[in-house]
Length: 109
Image 1 (cartoon, rainbow, N blue to C red):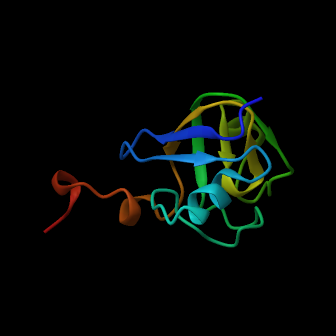
Image 2 (cartoon, rainbow, N blue to C red; image 1 turned 60 degrees about the horizontal axis):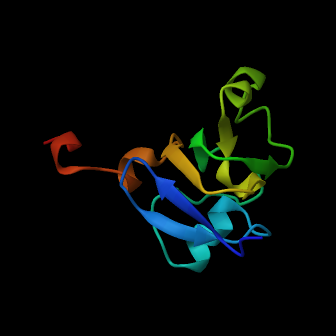
């Protein structure tokens, strides 16, 4: 069994290793990486919302105030409530995405 999985943020190309017993958000924080915005860390604020593009995972209950049933059915999850069971590719969707994933051509004057 793999001791860590590679997590790739499609927005920025950032990659980090995440243990199967830590959330996607905790793995990123442990390594001092940026990419997924950090909020309450408990599934209640929606700041760490991501879309799973590829990979498998385990999840815990997520606040319906932050994530609809429809979004979850389409692979949208809160990174603080998801644990990887394979390598994963993610798109950042959270409320603070613009500040974290800003690129030169997206900045406004």
